[in-house]
Length: 347
Image (cartoon, rainbow, N blue to C red; front, side):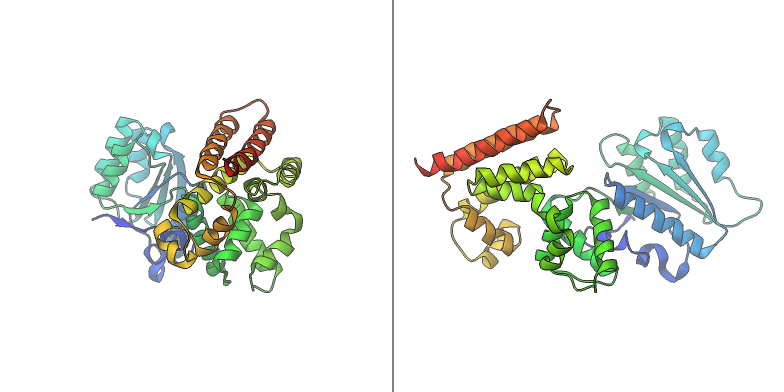
């Protein structure tokens, strides 16, 4: 039977030292743990939580870490063989997708009858490479900890709220969104920002607190560029873009924010007018974001939105494809989006 920490639970439990599946009653963790996914922060937390659980059960636990691509079956056999001195042992094998066939065979054979005094932790990116290894561990009853990258703003907002909650704080969706606009989409930066905010404030979070704490930084995010471009304010969009690049904001999240802004307005506009709270479920986005998109959609025509989406796609391809001047590609996109709004509105 495969045991798995599901999304929505895993975001909190993987990062929470009280995670029930890994630390109940200070018992050692499951003998087989598969950390599956390509989000480095979540994978690192899952490994750390499991190791901490083993050390809570046995402070003298022997912990060793290896890269799967550099291990041989002989080394694994030696590490997994019964210890003369007893005690808990933890073997962390990272990048399991890189394991060679002979190593996979040895580990899966061991997984059929694991040593209760050994915790075997395997991290795996979760793609097609090495899939048979991951599937074999699941079939052997491994506890599966999902660590996939978060998809979209809703999951990132949930992550922010969970981060505050696990550290004794609380925030609403609008506050979480403000923080994301201030620090970007990198989970490590988000987690650090949540921790720092709680340490430097009284714990009462709001969008105003975030804006005051980060001052100008929130104003130079990709979302500020996208918001100005979507209402056709080219000077404001270019000012925000150039300042963002000047202070070191990476071009990729700016391009992503621009594309997201266009897509969001297009989705909301195509759904027609309506109550944002009633539309939230069907559109799969928070009501405040729908309301904001409804305001941004004024002045846009369907043809203009098509042109804007094409411009945003071209920008993404240039920025992520290694264009020589990514800043210039973003400027071109700002002009193209604003032009699409004005041209579309006059058709």
